[in-house]
Amino acid sequence: MINKVYRDARPPIGMNVQNHWEQIYGTKEPEAVSWYQPHLEISLELIERAAPDFSASIIDVGGGESTLVDDLLADGYKNVTVLDVS
Image 1 (cartoon, rainbow, N blue to C red):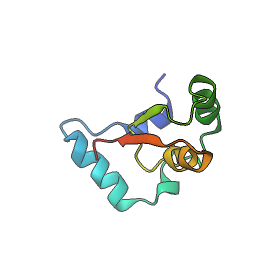
Image 2 (cartoon, one colour):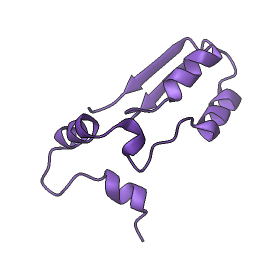
Image 3 (cartoon, one colour):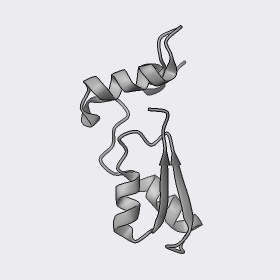
């Protein structure tokens, strides 16, 4: 069975992926999407375990409107990048 969050995140058949995500983020508030979480506690904990050095290079692939980068910067990480198709 396909998880509802995953199903909602898939572009319609034949739609360009970039156009899909630009439409999603252009028409919905960040909190209105099914996968939004105000803080990604589990991800933050795993990153802190794997990269305790605040100068570690970290990339958030598919970051969208995520607060992960904001939280990492607030925690003191300095080399953080977001890569997103939109």
